[in-house]
Image (cartoon, rainbow, N blue to C red):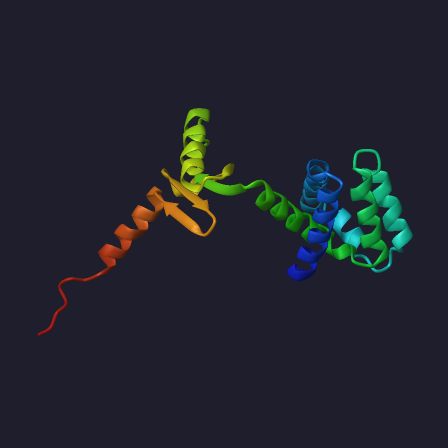
Length: 185
């Protein structure tokens, strides 16, 4: 289980280094790559978690995979994390760094769940509506869920607007479950 306090502390340290050297964009891109690799490649994560594999070998793997494309600050930071035997937190650190970056840049992530993909004009209208309501830049993540039948579910921060047919069907089902005519005699 990941300890989010450790993730946030290490991510904050990296973010402060990136701010100091004006490398936020480059380190953000590197952390996005790390996150994508950790999500898509379970073998990479298993190598990082393995107590059998020595730190030198893990560092060599990181150099081989990311040495040519990553910023020097990110690469050295990853080497320090591995040397300090904290490599199991790399994925969480990447997630926490991305959150810090978005917070710093004033970017909010909104999730739009629909039964079918939305067209570009509707997507732009949703982004513009959210931008005017929040006063922030919006990153819209679209999720296709066939079980919604129709309509949409829009989530941002801790708010959710559910205008799906699935919700309406469930509410109708609840209404039919209530028996208005209870035999009392």
